[in-house]
Length: 418
Ligand code: LLP
Image (cartoon, rainbow, N blue to C red):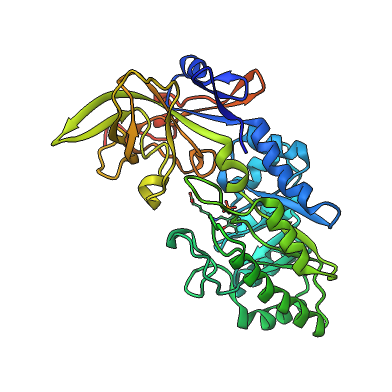
């Protein structure tokens, strides 16, 4: 459930009329709802109840400092994949000791930075990475806590680009090699084995793949215990899906309960790494219709947001609902492609949408809080959108719209005489 609802025929974010926010901050504009973010985080945290656990929000979904800060204030942990994400978490007041570091290509300086900041655990994705962590930790005279990301070879039944738990994916180590790697890790002087983790994919809409993966991982936990390696945590990754259209993913409470039940009597702290489930429906992208045009009988609404602002439709053929901010019954409904100004045929936010709209209208692209702004770019030299967070009747600018000068910040000309 989110806090974007119509009142008197116009869309609100909590107690703020979107039309007013758009007038004030201009478009394209990302708007997030604090109450929705908090509600979604609590859905995970409360469901785990007294079972030892840590919700490590996946920063990649939305890394705005204000978003991270809202979560940090709730006591959240964080799942990061780069030095930059860790720096953001710290800048936002997050607790480094509640951070897990995922990702297949950790560089030496990133490992050193994470060790210096005292993160909770590295989610190790390969044997060479383990060796590198040992080396860096030894040099810094620190002990690196690790968990091995095991690839359970489970088909998540999701889009191939966001499916990560199959044998052919680049993520994690093969389940058959895991024991050998754990045994090696146990002999390393600066490695402290803490746990095991897996992540089977994103936007999963059934519980089955999670449970299949968990069962395989738990078998591994038991095997390791027989070999004298006792783990203290299991990290079940992220991936719980959300409703974009008519998907009916399990509620976080069902998902968490199923996991806890499977873990049974084992003394394992559970780590969750949700990103989308917390942020997707906590945000919208507001855009204005610049022109309506018809080419060869096809209707287009040209809007001021584009694939550089929200790439999911272009990259994954993702469907996100597009609704008028203030519906107008007096207009004729037509089937529109909602397209941006970028010079690419793939620049669309939605296709074949039945809408009654005209130039100057505002549209809201729903479910844009996750993998929206974080995947945006300056393609076509378009300054990135502003971001606003609403909190009841309040609204706060949490990222200024980029200026033209910021577009070439850091660039320089060749010397005049060359
Ligand atoms: N943990 C790990 C190790 C991950 O790789 C991911 C996402 C997550 C947690 C969070 O997954 P979530 O709960 O958000 O599903 N850009 C794509 C999604 C890519 C997800 C990558 N990994 C999209 O817009 O659909």
